[in-house]
Picture 1: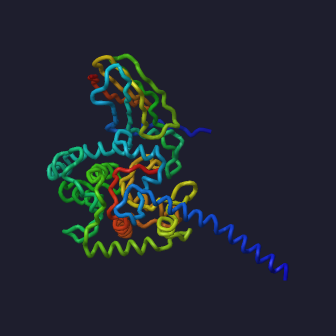
Picture 2: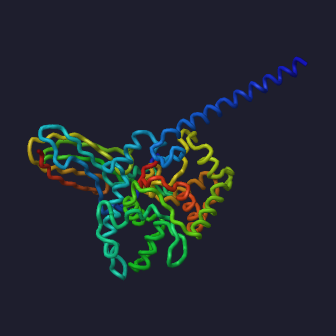
Picture 3: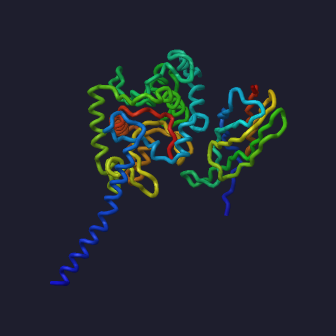
Length: 279
Length: 120
């Protein structure tokens, strides 16, 4: 009788020892999201990845004289003014001259991904730039994540900095967002993890020493220190899939856009930070 | 054991971009900060591509700042410095001057930025 009681007491002590760190972590997580700087309402617990970085990196992003992505923005401004293709047309010829900030593109990046009115197909900003290039400049396509496309995306995205992410209303887009929401909850890969498990439930806690962000696409294309260069949201999502040891979707797979559309809806109202710096 | 360096010249960044931040009207006889970022991959020559080939070393090795030709600040850069190197330093001028910033490095890389200083 005494031995059974002793074993049971030991089990309760073990359970209590396991539970305490989880409780402490949960309390710390709540505290971490209580004092954010991007808020739409007091009940909004969303937090940009900017605030999960240390003070030096936050300063790097906030200072245009230090942000390495501003080098690529300069490239983007040059590309905006450059004539291209058999139509011998520059972006500036239709959309106005290159400026800092670019008034013609004010608020544009905040409204993507969207549904293209002409074709009814979903597009992100990079897709729109590529479509303009093919259709209106009659120039050869820029592949995804090519330096020119990223530079121009950063330049156009900068014109929306500070504005809230505003996904448009469209039934096709809503369907895409729902598809993205399902993907967000779906376990993937050899590690059998869904995006939601880390970025909804465990955001604010740590993975291998790094704080897990909530994963809002507020600053794309980002200058990622790991890449030592600029990269798109699709590139980052691809890295996540590789990280859970899943086979990444094919480059033209519509699931990428579904995820992007869902992420934009999830981050709706948060300010654009393009071009952001991330570790 | 070091990997053999290729003899073919890698593609240097073109056009070269640099961010130079300094006060539009610098104060006279008071130190002010000059902050520079150069667009350069700073390839250290130890990385490999997906096929096992070494990515050739391509570094900026020297930075010099001159006021009217006189050297006022210099730095030697080494492989540990990451891409798009950021350098900031302090200057003090007594009157109008020409500031030239020179970056030089591997494979004959050379880039110059010139700024006219018109202090108060």
